[in-house]
Length: 410
Image: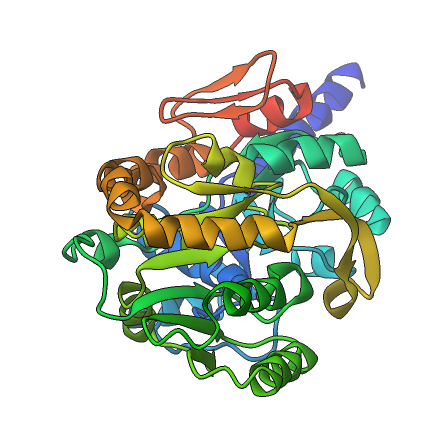
């Protein structure tokens, strides 16, 4: 009888090991979950990840939105996105900001990761429990967000994983070498309250109102129509003839040409989780003015950006996205911005020289230079159980024994 029981236990153990092995070794290395929309910053993240790692990883995709936007997306990505095989990968990687039901899209993979971006000092309270209870780790694109997520109450590991950006075309164009005949300031950002378009417009008009030698271009893909209408009203009331307001979705080539048309890029947003466009502008060698807050502080530590003091604390307005105010953002005194615009305009050759070396610095954010880090998120060369949570070109380290053990089993 004893031998029979031992035999049954042995068979059950073997079957369990086979089931476990099959579960932990999926036909897919990673299931990417998110939206597909190149014109949107967050919708571009899954595209960039899939496009640049599809030859190194076996990837399938689950959409968090009913409609996929395949404009400016190549056929390989479209094929992966439309593949009906949704077998859970060894790792599930969700790209999102914050949403109440996002965990429902994530398959039952052995390891569940979320790549999250947010632009304020706190994350929504419901997001804390959702992350802690449904995921194994959080990936964020800036040191600012590492601190923010930990401070907000995230107990699972928080890793810094820089945001890959499409700047190869920017780096391959001739670097900015002289100012335009009509000096052109410009910005490109969604029409949301924290992007601060109105402050830029008012500061520009105060310093250069209808000066025929100076121009301002304000571009946004989409956003709050009330902001667009308010900008139009200011332009109309001030009878401004040297301001161009562009509310349309640019193609990648149109966006590149817009950025090339500028002499100085300006983004005085009240909060950023990473911030792509300032990196694009310095890749072109264009002097760039940014607010010194949140993730922008990591940029202003370098010599490549003109930093604007930004310490006016305001409740962050994300009512369009999460129907609530959440944490704080930081505004800028208009006079500070006026002075910066005037200083760059009057000393342009000096600022132009500073950006010459910026191209080398910004290359660290290309997908090709981030490839090893991204691969070590999904298929680490080495996993170390250590004192911190760290992704490098050579290994992944975590202080979570639970996560360490999971990586060992896939």
